[in-house]
Length: 287
Image (cartoon, rainbow, N blue to C red; front, side, top):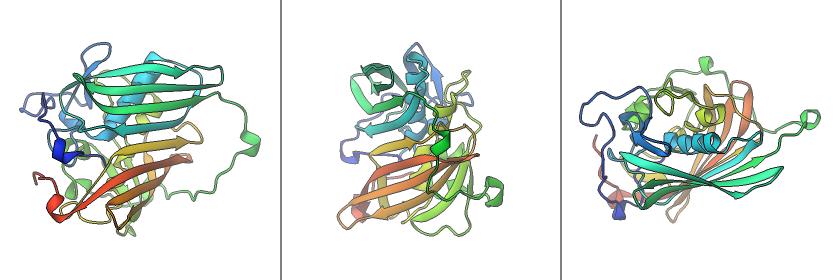
């Protein structure tokens, strides 16, 4: 779960989320302000600090803009997102360009920019579709169906408008650092625009770091500085399933790793690199 990052160098947010001042805001994470400009709503608010965006919908929007501006019949194989600083609330721009065109393989770079400062830099590999049905297979265990797991109030652990926008089901056997979950949301990325299936799936993946909590976020800070997703097939939007492991090392490093599923079974994996800080290094959080 990506929240406040680079805390010691965090700038003041230039703008607030739409809805922060009790004004009306739509049931969507973002509002389009132009061909490449957007405004975050309170639904996109991060979990660690109120004046930031959560990486989950932000990463989904970046991919959605790649698909909108550079349409292709190729399939998303990998989407990686490096977080270069706090993802500020308010207005921002998304830039997209082709790094490596090709008939069967292409690489696109995209970024989220707040004025002259870039907060997210993404790279997306897209590969040509071929018929491999006769050799398909994977070694991942399927998840129980969402209806087989109890509802979980994620807002009992985490703050922010993004968390409040989620419906969560979590295995009753979840333990610190290990758990199985399903999440979904009724909110689209952009007000008045339907999500594409892959972007609609991706907009929930960065939630993984908050689903199998190893340590209380009131005691340990463990925001992720990146998100890397690999797909073996294109996912269907709707419920997103997580089979998650959270691991902390002895020197401030950690990783959250998840096998991802949709309603038809496993679709790929997600990994998040964590900066782990204990005690006095915790950022302030409004509880």
